[in-house]
Image (cartoon, rainbow, N blue to C red; front, side, top):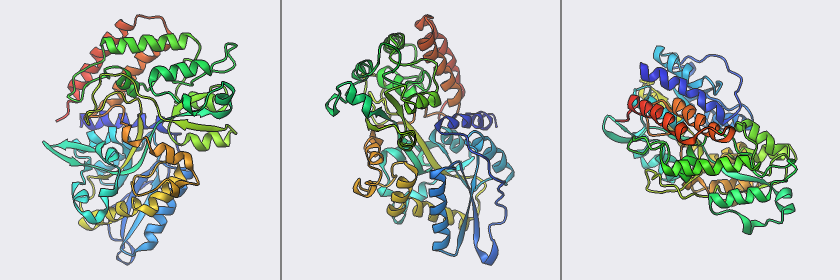
Length: 436
């Protein structure tokens, strides 16, 4: 239960992915058979705006498409969906399936809160061969010594660099100036900065740097669970970033929300964020485009053998909870998974939510109404979950890393001392949440 409690607290970190939504009414899935023999299935999610409307349409269409199952989709706040889910599932009154991130999901798969779904992937009729490989790779875990799939893609969104096209053009930049390295990105930000303080080149939060530490340094810990924070590579990167903030090219002290507001208000020329920025910038009258987050020269090696990626992701998945013990109910959930991720529904989901499609058969032409989302999708294969590979503790590790990046951006305190102190803390978390 210790792991479950700590993992539940970690769910709060998902709130940084989007705005905290209003809570819906309670759930309760006791009694699978409903009216006329229809199996009732309770889903929890946190989408309440355009994405929520699109999800509702898909759910409604599924319910109308057959007479065996009814999906009862219930809205929950991102900030508490995980903690509430664990408590409710323990009593058998929670959701039958839920959407949350891969970082939470691994711990809950290991401790038995979630059921793995390898049998869903093993059946070719479910169309999983059309899923994007890098998306499914994030939820393949070792459970009881056996590697298996534990979730189904829901909404996976890589980060990209969004830029104000008016500011870009005024600085004399063209698409030939798209940076190919992290150093080039910082140089472009300098060109987009005005010396009078009226315009910053890049709205970069001084928190959430796990992808950047991997892309430009040695990361926080290796894929084998060995701490790797206190290294020359990480120190060099942080020193570079301290100089960047001191030069006035990005405002310090911003979180993700403040960084987006800086971009959407015309205060900053660029921001690194997910695809929802397309609609937000449009609503604020900011003419915009995007390019990939450039790679770095980091030494961290990802599970697939790649190095240097600075592209993070918001990786949300569907997970089946342990309270589902009825084979018919599980079959109904699988039918919905198959339906949700089929070609046509992924076109609908992508156009309505701004998330790139999970299905690789969807073409850019089919997303032509939202061409920038098609461009975002091109970056999925080099994006990764920032803090992953553990049973739990990612929120504690994220907070520890934030203390390092904030020390870098906001103070003149010794970087080596900050790395050393944080390294000790992270090692304790790694020891506590050692993966099988």
